[in-house]
Length: 509
Image 1: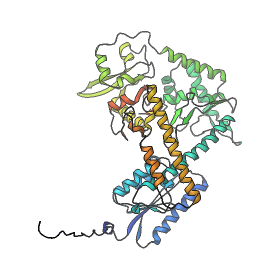
Image 2: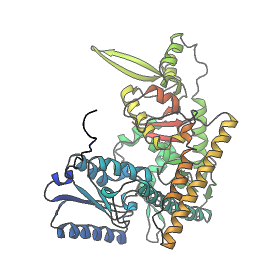
Image 3: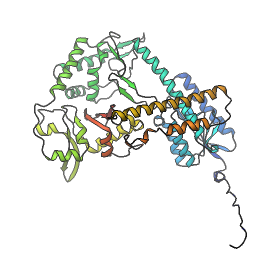
Image 4: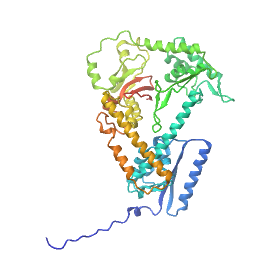
């Protein structure tokens, strides 16, 4: 080997940030959680504050102020201005983002980290003023994750307090009225429900027509032929809206409280209360439009018609149906809301064009005698609706999948959840202690130990929990087979989707 060993240092290149425009294009993001007057003043104050900050810096130029008003921070998907800001970032229109705090940016730890990482790949820093945190100066995401977890925990604690207050009000029989879509009533001068005579006549007309033997389709046609508009001013009625009117106990002067409940504050997903929580029936809490006896008769008639929809006897299914059922997942789960029979995939060929549709098998085999009101559904529209419904639940995969069947697996999983909760509580308490003492010396080792311990017990380590994508872009038969228990065609506009985890969700086409 010739020559002496030599080390040559190659200097670092000039910071690429210097390649940016002479003036940074700075955007600010601000948000308030409600539309109340005090919050609206805060909203205007935040806009004015950021305009002043950006315009006073000679090295900055205003890109835009992005501000969501009256929107919850638990999910970014409902914040139109936040999403617009992200689109601008992807198009190269922004160099720096200012925001008040992590809780203003996102109260969901997963969302916070996801968007900070994405913006870092675009070389767009985010400055959180309250935390004095600049993501361009971060060597690790660990502290951001801790602060984000604290913010999420704060949101969950706030939700728990609100939930406790609402349930306490339920126990006391306090009814909250939503007048915007409640046909027949308005808020009176005394703050209590007041009957609107013209709309009350429509409600009585619907009840009388149903008891006289008319179907939901007949009532829909009657209302539209007479030019009667819905509460929101629409001239077209849906059978789902008519059915809701017929099932609404408030028209008899009563109110059933806690019909649904929110699973968690982060997703905001609501579930029908099927006995998980107590319900409270408050009688005679406002003026009735329909006598209670009439309301009971309508409920009995609806039950009778549902029972009577089942055909006397279905003919033996053709042999090809077995092949068909195994080929198409929806053949096993798609049922008719009118007669509870399976739907069947059909190919229509007309004028040289081919269309794939789904139709009620009972109606195809036995005719209108057994099923008079089952819509024909375009397969493309059906697939789009199911993709939308599944995407609404993919952030909570545990509510999509069927519960564990083996007792030992269920026990192990429950033990895992309890261990995770204990670790999470410890992390939150540790953060609270540091915040209270205000003497944290920057040592993150206690957090690191807890986080590593939690990762060892990740539910994803168990193969019983089937992998699912973060978001479904197109319909997939395999994923549908994993998560769908039943899909009922309510009418030509609505589906009732039941997932294997037990959640029911109404979805529009």
